[in-house]
Amino acid sequence: MQFLSDEQLIKIYQNNKDGQSQIALGILYERYAKQMLNFFYFSLHYDYGKAQDFVQDLFVRIIEKNHTFDRNKNFKPWVYRIASNMCKNEFRSIKVIQKYADHVIYTSEHFISDNETENMLRICINKLSQEKRSLIILRFKLKLSIKEIGEIYECTEGTIKSRLYYATKELSKFYKG
Amino acid sequence: MKANENMERVYELLELFNFGELPEQDKSYILSVMSENEYTNLRSTLTDTEILFANAEELNLNESLYKALINKRKNENFLIRVLKQPVQFYKVAASVLIILGLFSIFHYTNLNNNNKKKASNDTIYIYKTDTVYSRFVDTVKLIKEKIVYITQKKEPDPSLKLLSSAKPDYDSSKEICPNDIDRIKAFVFNNNVSNDTLFKN
Image (cartoon, chains in turn yellow, blue):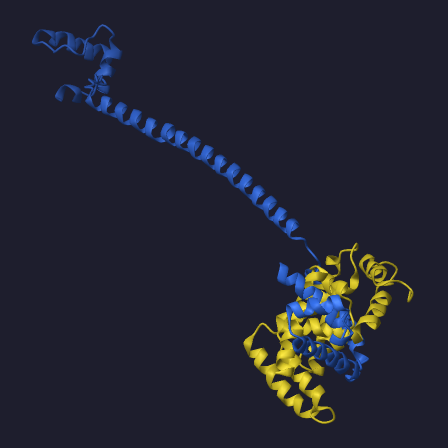
């Protein structure tokens, strides 16, 4: 079953036949769990524990909402869209934003060590809005193509390029002053 | 729209080239949009970000996480699982409409039936009580107002009866005349009447 595509695996899970659904889910977990952990870790201000919780939560949502997956579309953007919305919801509350800001100050003490430029850049990335930060992470950490990011946010490649430009501009403003 | 198109083109170039590496045509295009310094800053920010993420710590996933996820699903209450089953909105809306429709039909049918029952009950009530009562009272009044004369026959005195039976041609209603004394004497004699109390009274 390892050679099957993500879409075929989720189809098996949706059909729930012959007890193969658990195997299909296991394979999907192997493929996505680590990259989702990275996505959440960088999106949630380097909070590793929270990122792990979010990964588990994400798969619970995949299990429960698998019927909403359109079989004619790609699985990857669908998963990232769920993850992105989870982050968006997390940062809705001002209290939470403040909590994360405190967490950044705490964690920044740990990574002010080897490379000052990198540490500075990390702090600057955290200053970005949630959406802009997610775009940067998807593009540069998870190496998704512009097309894939467009599928996640359900907009054209041109729009994504434009948004990435503005995200880079804002980041540069924080970073270069 | 025009500005967005510019940004798209600039971003494409930013990802690919340093300012010095840009083809002449693109270089002049960039200079029409921003300064060289600005472009260089943006480019260096992008490259530094790429380097940052490339050097970022490799995160390891806790292996027990998947087991915990599966166990959580297994231990989940059956009822909760059923409740979590996907239900499309239009199905819920259709169900509610059907239930409301059935309820309203049932309600109106019931209402009509109740109205009919009430009407029939009223009719019966008027007929059985009011009508009968009025007739009865009328009759009673009429009876009371009517003057009824009752003629009562007097029973004959048993002693007189006895006398009349003794002699059928004797009329007890007639008063005894002094001239009939002879006849009485003869009667007493003939009928052997020893007790003369009758005459005493």
